Amino acid sequence: MKRALISVSDKTGIVEFAKQLVDLGYEILSTGGTKRILEENGLPVTGVDEVTGFPEILEGRVKTLHPFIHGGLLAKGNDPSHTKHLEEQGIQRIELVCVNLYPFQKTIEKPGVTPEEAIENIDIGGPAMLRASAKNHESVTVIVDSADYDEVISALRDSGEVPLETKRRLAAKVFRHTASYDALIAGYMTELAEEEQPERVTFTYELKQPLRYGENPHQKAAFYARPFGSKFSIAHAKQLHGKELSYNNIHDADAALQIVKEFEEPAAVAVKHMNPCGVGIGESAAAAFAKAYEADPTSIFGGIIAFNREVDADTANKLREIFLEIIIAPSFTEEALDILTAKKNIRLLTIDFHAEKVREKMLTSIEGGLLVQDQDEHTLAEAEVTVPTTRKPTDDEMTALKLAWKVVKHVKSNAIVVADQSMTLGVGAGQMNRVGAAKIALEQAGEKANGAVLASDAFFPMSDTVEEAACAGIKAIIQPGGSIRDEDSIQMADKHGIAMVFTGVRHFKH
Image (cartoon, rainbow, N blue to C red):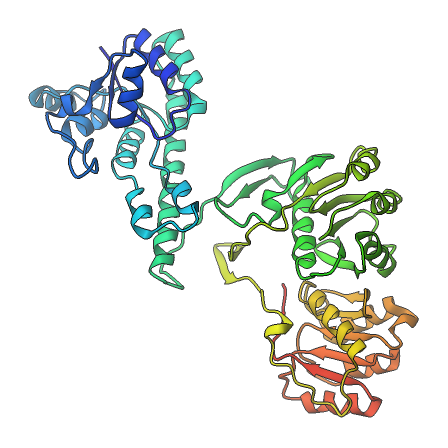
């Protein structure tokens, strides 16, 4: 009689699976809660302790770590010397293993979980059995996912054997599963030990959806989500309507969300190619969108819009007038949904703006490596603001400077943003020199630059940017300061009566 060892934390479908194995002539070995539930359902089960002749000890920490179990898992089916060793020791082979692990992830997701509780939910015997079986997959069918039960049963019914290619695929899944499990544990323990830059890092992600292609049609791509990552994210957005998200959609949607998060008042953010093309604030979502649209009615075409307030019918009527890829909001009224879903392809996403935001590391892949850094969560409220110029900004100018500073933080460097108190007027992004970015932003702002403010993500290496701003009528500037030629910029600002604010913090974004 062939043997199957079953020990699962997730008991979905396990009774029916075990019943079918019994019908196929398998002896079932099991432990603990799995053994109990199988017996309660009338299935014959042999306890692991009956096989090993050794009871569970240390509150169940040790039960399957025994040669009578692991010898049965690791013995090669086509090796006479292995067969001889089993016969000499009285060990019987185990041909099928169905195991999943203590719920470590669910445990550490719980609010207020203690280190003791988390550590107690680190499975030892389970991974050992899985890895042993997966290593010996030519002789052992190993299952870690209930989604694979039917395929295995079908193969056993059809031919009495699980094909090698299926065994190999199941073994690969096991090693991915145990690697992910260990990565979560390593991350938790590293955080518990307060290690900032360990000698090795391992991150794990779960497939959220395959994508049709990447940035371009000839590039393959998929979207993965981080287990217990921030719920206040595109990875946890709910899509209410429209086509499947693309690789570029997801990138742009994330960029739009990160900007709109900066605002407490009603705000609307329009994004194209990872850069904001228009940002507006107002008394309502509709008023904010009107400002964002006015900021750049050309670039917003085919763009992504993010709101931090519910989208109502008034706002939806404005939105439906233009071609948009995605609209993101905390919610949509029924009337707004009726209006917007009349457009077949537009994607409507909702995100819980009250969800807890997890402080995650930013990961950027490069060929042959990975860059890891903290997110740029610095705000103006944390900055040591100074005003080195003779003229100080007025209250209205300071309001505009704060808006521009929130936005320029999210613009690709070199970055310049021109704004007034309620909207962006011009955005210069990703230029190779700062004065070039300023010229683009000022040209876009046009006559509206007169009396407006300007923000720069990094210091001015020369006074030429200030001079360009002065010629356009800019009245106040916010920048980090810190250049060896700061005095040149200060003098140029004083010459033209411009108020300049230093934040002491730059916001490079590559």
